[in-house]
Length: 229
Image (cartoon, rainbow, N blue to C red):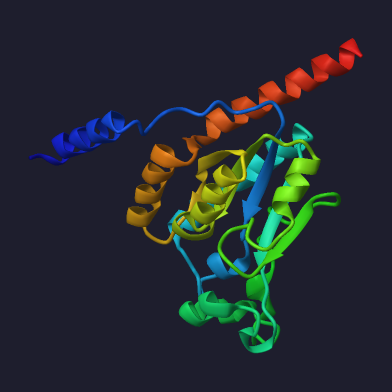
């Protein structure tokens, strides 16, 4: 069976099982930018991801600008651990590179937000120790308080913290919109496989142009509502 035929058969199998349905985004979105720190972009960084991360960096900058223009809530996440990773648990033990985010790490640059994606005043920063931005944080309760119904997701890495956050987003009752051009991984295989699986089961995966158009509609709708008030 050819590669193209195998792909078609796989999609047919997924469709027959009721996967690949579409989720409609709501009218009250927020944006979360996951873990976009220097460890992924600096060539000497322990999590350096190369071109895939650089492409996502550019896409995330554009998406963040549109989110700010639309005046929707914006969240950023980073990772931080006590000395020696005391509060990092099994994940810290499993992934040695996470030591660069410990209080006693030798190079503090690695934990700083990358250029162009620094949090602005009024934007929330969620510091986490595990993959999902929802796990052991206040994200879900804050989104609920703000009456958010949809979460645009950007950041790194697609197969790790982006995927975990998207799955938990679905499980907490928010529509996850994973922006393909604003998420990245160190290899195309895990990146594409996880985007396929997220679209099939948990989220909507959309291109940057569609995400920007969606934010444009949200902005126009709010301006219209303000004019009528």
